[in-house]
Amino acid sequence: MAAAQYVDADTHIVEDADIWSLLGNDEIELKPRIVVTEPDKAAPGVFPTGQYWMIDGELYGKGGQALINYSDGTRTFQNSAGRVADMDKYGIASQVIYTSIFLGLAPKSPRTELALARAYNRKMAEICSKYKDRFHYVAVPSAMNVRETVADMNEWKKNGACGLMLRGYENDKMLNHKHFWPIYAAAESLDMPICIHIGSGSRNLRNIEGGGGNAINVAMPNLLAFGSIINSHIPSEFPKLRFGLIESGSEWLPFAVSRAKRYEARYKVPNHFEKMLADKRLFVTCEQHEDLPEIIKLVGEDCLMLGTDYGHSDTSTELKAHEMLMARNDISRAVADKINVANPKALYGI
Image (cartoon, rainbow, N blue to C red):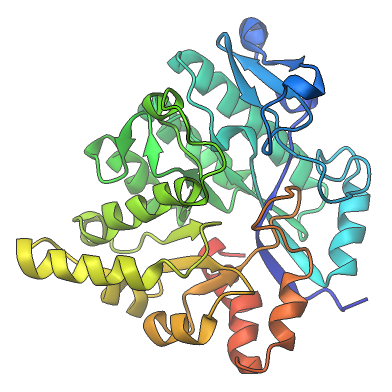
């Protein structure tokens, strides 16, 4: 068993019905309910359990496919002690926890989105308060209700949130839209990073057919988010605001950086990539199997982080990722320590 030392920059709760237990009394009718289909009728690959959330009359995959054996209750936090035991097993000192359901949630009703986001954040604060040094949650906003979200952010920060999650598409808007600027202003004043996780809040994309099983489709919103930030005035308008790009790997960076430079030269648009790196305001989760020496040549030593994707069971999931990174002979121990510990601490402020 490795000594607990690493910061796991990307883990997940797989929500169960208890996550909605702190809905307000006037919001009970909005509570999502679990719908179970026969296994042979379930969506292939991604949701083989056939379990879904019914939200605003629409089905959303419940997630948490059983391709990796987790101890009972560790993914839902019904067994937090078991989750901590797993962390100790893999040398993890602290986990940064992201949602599962909100990664793809795009409800029809702003009222539903606000109520569910508030209930989720209250419950995650309650869960993490019992293990303050081990669990750190990333709050989810209601992007359709910016004024209410901004009003709530101080409470989230006070209750232990280490960041604010956005997706590359929020309510069919990209992240350079001025709709989100009040959120950026509040996040900067509270020293809360914007954590852009793979996923989508686009209702239009929900209606596109044939997207399942497409690995590029999954990562693409983060690439678009990178461009939305780097080639916009957001970094100069909010000069202390940190950004993280989570669970899309890092090998797309050479392509995206090259395109950003060409757009800067051709169209005279801003390009804040180099300055954000120099200011240590841009962070990206890598994966331990990637060609990291080449990526480090581009972004330096202070940008990359590593997450196990604990809670999920997909192509990003590797519970031994930090130990495997330390065992590589093409990266120095000092750089591996930055990726495993110092860089995620710098992004999340933990």
